[in-house]
Length: 207
Image 1 (cartoon, one colour):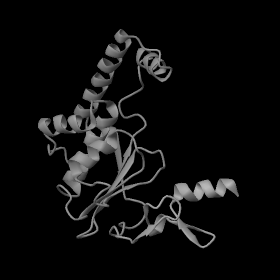
Image 2 (cartoon, one colour; image 1 turned 30 degrees about the horizontal axis):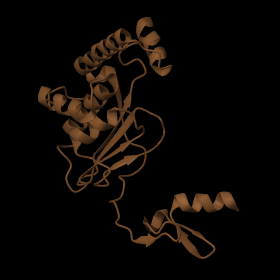
Image 3 (tube, helix red, strand yellow; image 1 turned 90 degrees about the vertical axis):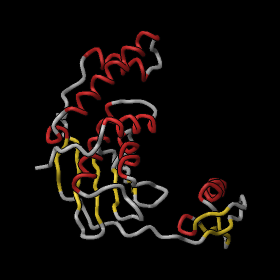
């Protein structure tokens, strides 16, 4: 059973919205996932004490970054491109970990009107009135997520795999093509020369 005691305040929510740019259901799901992580794994991450592994690049990840302190720059936010609304959190000090997986029936299906507006958005065929109504529906859905019991939104599991290792600092090499620095683990070798990936791909297409 996941505790429901509040750790994310209304002010935190406002700050996460400002960081992301707007409120939406995806951001709301990230806020609730961060709420679980903060309560079960620990407070704001410093020096990689807490590590997040996210299996999507959707809006939720912005809330997770902002509220937990797990970021790409520190090396304690790891993206696995699986296209799943699933987030694992690890605490290095004692190995405690949790995987938070979005339930398919979390807040029910979209209304027909909401689906129609999504279709118009994808087709870039929205009027100003459509946009206003779309964001009204988005905010209403986000509010439901923020107020829902956590067990309705997520399943809670053990993560797959061990705690990720600490981020490593690698050497940088000079690219023989563009002359820019490239991390050695991302460099490619061609005909005895070292290249960054874009330059290597250009060479590969010519040969």
